[in-house]
Image (cartoon, rainbow, N blue to C red; front, top):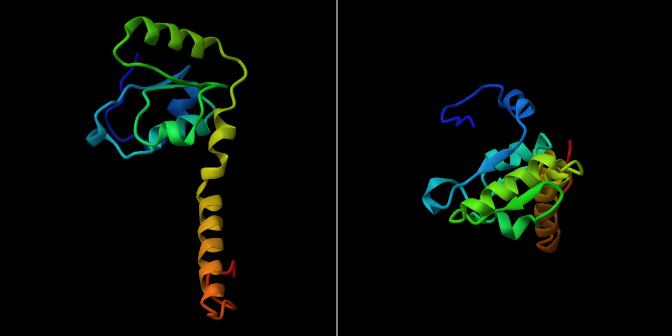
Length: 130
């Protein structure tokens, strides 16, 4: 196990060398509600073993390489890491594809354009792709 506690410029290279990503954080002040490191690991299609931290259980369902653990149970942690390591039907990348910057921007543009239309504001130049 290697713990990274500093900025790494090409982090995707480290993820690609990894077998599994473990996110054991329980302290709410220790990270943002949807940890970017979890999203990055998923984008690299790594199996992710995590606590039910922040908004993760609200956004992702367990399965296909995404596994929740009870941090207080060493047996469960060992068991679920082993499961993650032998899981071949990984779909963690598919789970996060809707959260790319381009797709989020597209959703935000749609929301703003709907608001502008409801308020009858000209949308010719506002928030369009041009």
